[in-house]
Length: 147
Image 1 (cartoon, rainbow, N blue to C red):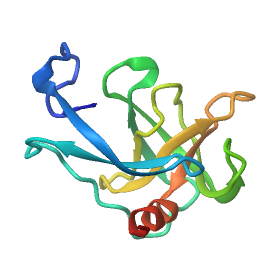
Image 2 (image 1 turned 90 degrees about the vertical axis):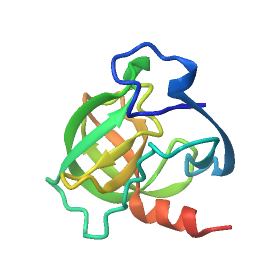
Image 3 (image 1 turned 30 degrees about the vertical axis):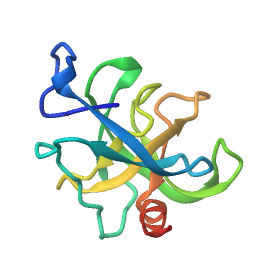
Image 4 (image 1 turned 60 degrees about the vertical axis):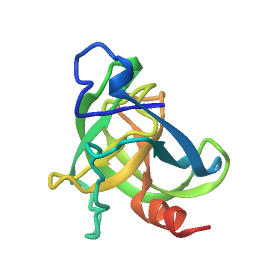
């Protein structure tokens, strides 16, 4: 079940603002999944994935559900793009960002200023403030192209 983002900003969540979907495929190690919505989805917007290089210092716009708040927004900057061992003990291409995220942001997007998807929020490092990790668009593209 997921929210229709065009309807659910700061409003009560009702059945007409929720879509039901089924998971088509997932990769637990990469913390990625695709969900196929059931029923009408004409108001759903699909993000384009950035094709340009992702550079340190690049502004990121983070959208998610921080601590359960419907469609929260924060921004930060790319700190680094690197392969790192994630929480599932697998090496994964990530974008490390200086962005204030928390529980509830997982699965949310990090977008550039043109609205292109840069990464998917996956985990944070709680040893210091605003150290967040996003699954890099290269991993997302490989996942989407896999069977």
